[in-house]
Image (tube, rainbow, N blue to C red; front, side, top):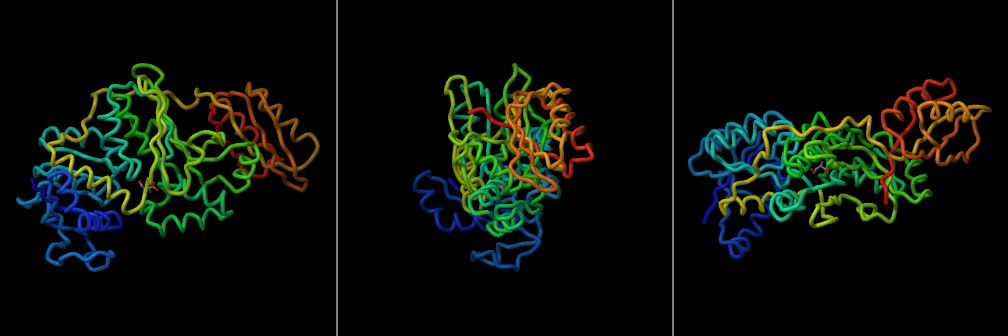
Amino acid sequence: MQINIGLIGFGTIGAGVVKILQKSAGLIEKKTGVRLCLKRIADLDITTSRGVVVEPEILTTKVEEIIGADDIDVVIELIGGYEPARTIVLSAMRAGKSIVTANKALLSRYWEEMFQTATECQVAFYAEASVGGGIPIISSITQGLVANEIQEIYGIINGTCNYILTKMSDEGLEFSEALKQAQANGYAEANPAFDIEGVDTAHKLSILSSISFGGHVQLESISTQGITRITKLDIDYAKELGFVIKLLGIAKRLSANEIEASVHPAMIPENHLLSSVNDVFNAIYMVGDFIGPMMFYGKGAGQLPTASAIVGDLVMLAHQGKGLRSTKEAAIKVRKADTISSKYYLRVTAEDSTGVLASIAGILGKHGISIASCIQKERGQFVPIIILTHEAEEGNLRAAIAEIDKLPEIKDETVCISLVAG
Ligand code: HSE
């Protein structure tokens, strides 16, 4: 069987899809019986070299030449972001084209609209590459693991952040230098603020949770914090305390239709499976009621891993796959982050003078937060004070930090990182 493809968006990942088709279309046909035929590529810029040779006549600057083409069955959308991707994908579905996309922003924000339109237009919608790069996590959850009630998800699902944190930890790189390298490697979003501020992880967690828990988990309900305030100092203290800092997307089932879901930097015990996931690698650690714990590991960003997931979707589509479907009409309720409990690491930057520690401890005590240990090594005008707390509710902790940061002896905003149990 032959599938005729129109590719919209000829950037890093689009060029990766072309490279894979050029190298492996024959092998894929031999293994699956599916002939993948790239008919047209649309991009605003069709002159810059993408490191791959394509016949000039298949290039166009007009998406209509793909959306309106009778000889195209499926549109691969690789523009990224909300618009114009949303309008183009909706028009393509209305023109009877199935969709394969890597666009987590689009899917997480316009979940209902995408699936409603796909159902109305009787087309398939695939998005394996939207989460975990080359890791086939979406098809695993929606097919191989479907017998399970998913209870917990802990994901390192942003390659850029994981790359930055690894480089800061292993090579002592500054944050900005590590980010530059991640961009040069093609890992980062067009707007890297989406990566480092945790938004990309929230997009992906919204998708993972929605397919895992059986209802749409809205993006806005996920409490989100990125890695921009993490310094080398925090990474070094974490190491000394036996932890590794990672940006995690966490979701847990609390009841049939209530979950907790959040994105934040977390300190993971160094013997935890997730702590050895480094560089651009992603990992999704999940617990299902029948399967128990399991972990998926692989490259979560980059040209060829992501393109590999897209090509996989094309073959599933050819095999009459129905694609992703919206599970239930009702949204899943996400519990407010304020009431979630954890142990915390705090780095308070304070004037090195008598009584400051007593004031900080007093405020924590007033908010019902118990101190497990405290480290102050340096002497100077301002010093970092590291405090580990016992289990505390996030709301109480935030209120205490706001009060601490108002003390005249405090120099910078306090850094707060939750500890993941081993
Ligand atoms: N910017 C994303 C990341 C790309 O770094 O993980 C893959 O979704």
